Amino acid sequence: MRNVTALKCISCSASYGSVPPAYICPACGGVLDIEYDYGAVSAGAFLDGLARPAPAHMWRYSALLPVDVGGPLPRLSVGGTPLYRRTPLGEELGLCEVMVKDDGLNPTGSLKDRASAVAVAAALQQGAKTVSCASTGNAASSCAGCAASVGMRSVIFVPRRAPQAKLVQLAVFGAVVVRVLGDYEQAFSLSAEAISVYGWYNRNAAINPVMVEGKKTVAFEIAEQMGWEVPDWVAVSVGDGCTVAGVGKGFWELQRVGVTARQPKLLGVQARGANAISRAFREGGEARGGADTFADSIAVAVPRNPRKAIEAVRRSGGAMVEVSDDEIGRAMLRLGRSCALFAEPAAAAALAGLVAAVEQGIVAPHETACVVVTGNGLKDVAGAERVAGGPIDVPPELAELERRLAEAAPEVMSCTTLR
Ligand SMILES: *Cc1c(COP(=O)(O)O)cnc(C)c1O
Image (cartoon, rainbow, N blue to C red; front, side, top):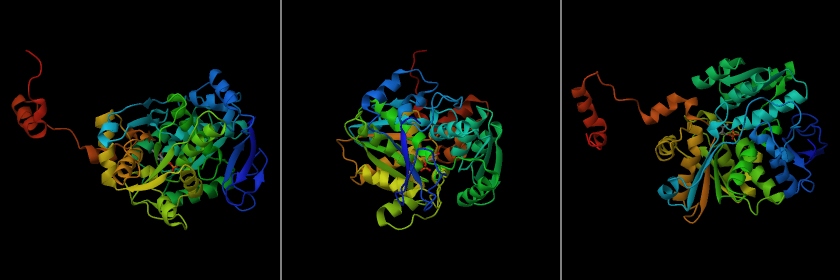
């Protein structure tokens, strides 16, 4: 907290002190943004913080986080996920380099852990006993997991279509799971009402400004893993818009405090059937649309925080693209086969978007790009099975095996070792 100077409304620019007056702007209801004393956080002070031991990777960036890293924290190890450099995707897409940041390796399997860790830390430090959110699934499981790690209760509102693996994960963490027989929009509204009735700590990403602060640590890590360089492009899938806003803020801050020399351009990727933010980016107006995509984590019809997302993409000089479910499916297989990464559909959407951006000439061959894999494929095996198919079923007989292999995988039938 030591470097937080103010919370500023992104709609009416009202500025509040470093202690939040509420989750949203009391004057106009706009979303708040946390500002730091960037003068005090010099490159030296930021880098010094990295040398000190920290309970988990993401807390190393304490100089630019809104919680007291010396105080109580969730007991999960969030962050420190691998950045794979020079993947085969570079050659496949015809780019100078494509790297992949695998945030599906976080403790509950998604980038959302970065946000939930900060939220639960803030909740703990305020003495909250119960934390709550509405979520398409990943924010839910990360919130429940971070809460369980410190014995805090969680109440999670999910839409009817949340995939089974995510629901099971919640139940295992001991969350009170409320399945709202409606869409995400309705789950969100009910959670907001219940939170105000019961006074639970509100982890809703679109409303609580600390969420973006947690998510920005993925940008810090990418730059650190590149030796304080940045790629030309960073591709991120977009639902509510909080993730891309966080990634953008992280890279902006690194340049602001003088740790990096420039910022990457953000490539915000939405599903064609759930394109509220990308349409507002292109045409202006209110961000509203459908939620028709199998990539459940980005199936958001009424994003609650489009403005931070759109401003982050604009400020970076980046672009937004839309991809079909077929393109997302192909990107899932490409990630699996070229990089051995199992990404959930919403995560593979980032790669699908990069492919589309190359085809459209938005990303040029001499450029480098980083794809952020935001969630693990094990979270939604039904979605993956739809694109990858199932096993070859055979009775336990060699002759039958040979017949089926000849149809399905003749390439493995030639003997490659000496008998
Ligand atoms: C939440 C999520 C996103 C999108 O993040 P927003 O903040 O909603 O834009 C993308 N991918 C995965 C796997 C997610 O869980």
